[in-house]
Each structure stands twice: as structure tokens, then as C-alpha cells.
Picture 1 (tube, rainbow, N blue to C red):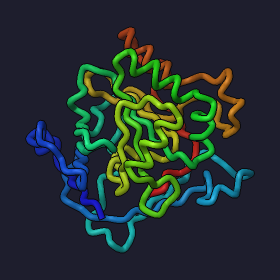
Picture 2 (picture 1 turned 90 degrees about the vertical axis):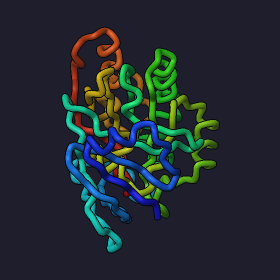
Picture 3 (picture 1 turned 135 degrees about the vertical axis):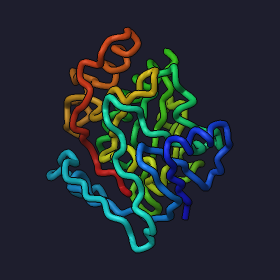
Picture 4 (picture 1 turned 30 degrees about the horizontal axis):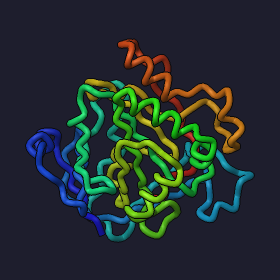
Amino acid sequence: MRKIFLFTLASCLLMMGIMVSSASVYACGPQGGSEVSHQGESKTHAHNEEGKTMSNIETANGVESGMGAAAQVTPQVNQAEVGKPAPEFMTEDIKGEHVMLSSYKGKIVVLEWTNNECPYVRKHYDTGNMQKLQQEATKDGVVWISIVSSAKGKEGNVSPQEAQTIIDKEKAFPTYKILDESGAIGHLYGAKTTPHMFVIDQNGILAYSGAIDDNESFKPATVTGAKNYVREAIDALKAGKPVPTSQTQPYGCGVKY
């Protein structure tokens, strides 16, 4: 079981520059916290575990999250608010590289919650829509962080080696890919669905939260003609303009905490 460390912002700043072990995630929100160990459980009507039910797929408005019997302290939940500083986190990616959100200040950062078994994620990857957006963004200096918050034994949970294989197979372009098996980062940001997108501006302020685009269907053909909110947000931030649409309702499979 991975350990999760929750700190006040001041404590987080003291940790800057320190390498975090691969067994730990440091998640820092506006509220104080403490070290916790937990197992997460999530329920949603968006997509069942086996992928058998497609007729009742909905947006995950009613995702319920509960902590398992092993919970000692409730983790910080949904500290992300548009217009305010994005919650800090520090961890290692699948290659063992140190990832600390605040170190990317001065750059636009995109957080993408993903699950390679989810039909909504498959919609954007099988059509090349997500990879195209990733490539456009990273070529222009954007830091793209893909995050898998599927718990052990749940749909989408993968090893670092499996995660790299998926990247290679899909020809994806994330700057980093993080396995958030404990759900610490997912809960910190209130990630509800896969995909669920967050765009952070050059000053570390959360500028956009929500869906990747305005078409909630899982059908690949609906990518064409859809309004891409993430691209719109990135373009606005690069131009020094306000993000036209700063928040939308995310759609997709519920995150498998």
C-alpha cells in the first residue's frame, strides 16, 4: 500500500527540491493534513467495470466516493478551484522522474485523468484526437501530465511498464505519466471522470476544469466538429487572454478509486 503525505502549503514549500520516493505522493492543498494510508472505492453510473453496459452511459454527475476500512484519515478532497492556485503535488512518474507541480511555474500545465479501458478515453485515443492535442501542446512548451488514479485491481490500473507500453502503442505525447494508485492526487483535484481535464496557467492558477470537448458521446465519430475546451484554454493563455470557458461538466467513465 502506498503512503500519502498531505501538507500545508508552507510545509510543501519546505519540501521543494527534495526527491520523493516512488512509494510516496505529496499532495498539498489549502488545508492542513497528515500522513494517511487508504484504499479508495468509487461508484458511478458512467461505465461499469466490465464495460458491458453502454446504453446507460452518463456523465458522472453523481460519483460517490467512500473510504475503505483501512482509512485512518480522510484525504484532502477537491481542493481545486478555478481562479485559485492549483493544489501542489509531488511524486515520481512511470520512469522515476521527479514531478513537482510548482516547479513548472512560468509554463502552462495540463492534467489529464485517463483510463485506457474506458470507452470515452478510447474515443479520443483511437481517433488520434488526444495525441494530436498533446503533440500540439508539448511542442509549444506546455507540460502535459497524464494521471491514472485507478486503484489496484480496478479497471485501468497498470504497472509502470504497462503504462509505457500503452504510450508507445498509442503514440501518445505526455510529458509525464503518473500512476496515482492511492487516489491522492485524484481526490485532491476532485477528478470525477476519464477523461477529466485541468489547465493551469503560467502563474500556477487553475484556469480550466472539466470536459475535453462539448460532445458527451462515447462514439469516435463525434470528435469531428466538437469544440475542444482544452485547446481553447491553452490558446487563450498563450495569447494572454482570459479563458472563454473556464469550467464545464466533465463526462466519461467514473474514476476507479
